[in-house]
Image (cartoon, rainbow over all chains, first blue to last red; front, side, top):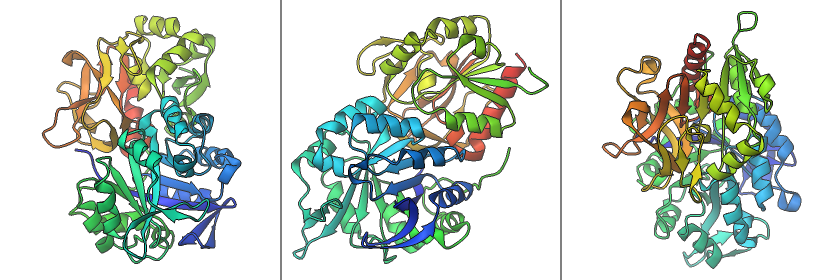
Amino acid sequence: MLRKRLLGAVVVRQGWAVQSFGYRRWLPLGKPEFLVENLDRWGADGIVVLAIDRGDQGPDLQLIERLGALGLSTPLTYGGGLSTEEHARAAVRAGAERLVLDSVLSHNPQAVGAMASAVGVQALVAALPLLHGADGELQHLQHRTGSKGALAGPICELIAGEQVSEILVIDAAGEGKGKGFDPALIQAVERHTGLPLLAFGGLDRPEQIRPLLSRSQLAGVVVGNALNYREHAIGQLKASLTDQPLRPHRQRCSV
Amino acid sequence: MNGGRLTVGIVDYGVGNHTSVLRCVRQLGFRARISPQPDELDQADVLLLPGVGAFPTAMNRLHASGLVGYLQQAAQLGRPLIGICLGMQLLAENSTELGFTPGLGLIPGAVEAIGEPRWHIGWNSLEVAEGQTLLHASDGEVMYFNHSYAFQGPEAFVAAWSRVREGSEPLVAAIQRGSVWGLQFHPEKSQAPGLELLDRLIRAGGEC
């Protein structure tokens, strides 16, 4: 039976791993390689590296190559600056297993099909930073422009056409606060699609993660800041979530 | 074998990233080299065929690299060959991914879309087929999968299965015909259980 996943996230800005507070303030944490290596060693079910300031620069291929050179035995997912088929090919060639697509979904949705043909739909994850507006309506936050609004038609079509294989639902308001993930965001996305979902933002403690994992459409949770301050935090979290269908924790060891 | 250590030849046909496989094989203590050159691959005790992406693209690249005949001949000669993920699918007779494409034809069977759900992504346990002594120690172990097409073929060549849900139809997770093996999951990304399994297969290949 397919297990649910507990993934570790590393947010990268200007080449440095940072702790993000709502994508508005950033606390430098060090070289991304160190954090990624720890997550690999501690037995994360996957590592998600998000380079949040790439804009039109394309993917940070040097970063992906440096991470690939670590000899990780954990699947690596990369997001940041991916907007063309060639970007997708290059990121996979550099060492990413899966790719997180964000602004391309709004700015150039036609490119997503070509990316899927190049690297496979199973490699593509759509990132949707969401929050509730003043009247409680669902809003999509465009990091690049800072604008908020309803999910654009082309994005809904991409999702309905299953041109991506998973959706990374980001609690844009709760990100970096450790106060838990707003489950209403997941419920709202579930009404649009049957695609597997990943939840990211504000997740820190087992009691915040458990109700999300119990949702059948949720394939996994992505935890960021909380993993950076405790050694073996993955194992500790999993030890508190043995009632959930997660992969049993097995720390990396040499053969 | 060179100096007592097995050498693994990672077949480079320009698709995907082979560095993680190279690092993994070296971590296991084997010699390893990535090459598209038959004369260099001839020096290897075990051939490893990785792959990510789409089946037709990969087969086109294998043809363009002149490696189709080389791999078919290697299998005929009984050389150990391990295909990983898309590399496993390429061992089949054909695939319907993005249209019909003939494969290497080293193991009877075809590659078809998974159906419902459309993808098999994440960590799943192996159900090892009876009599598969080499994989037996990995029965029940959890490996990392990421695919939307799967091998379908005679049970005689299926070495292990996986199920998306309890009680659901099994998906082929590993195949074998003689010294040719295919692993649908990524052993190099499956942490200790994957490394242990790959280690056993390479060592067994070295004894062929």
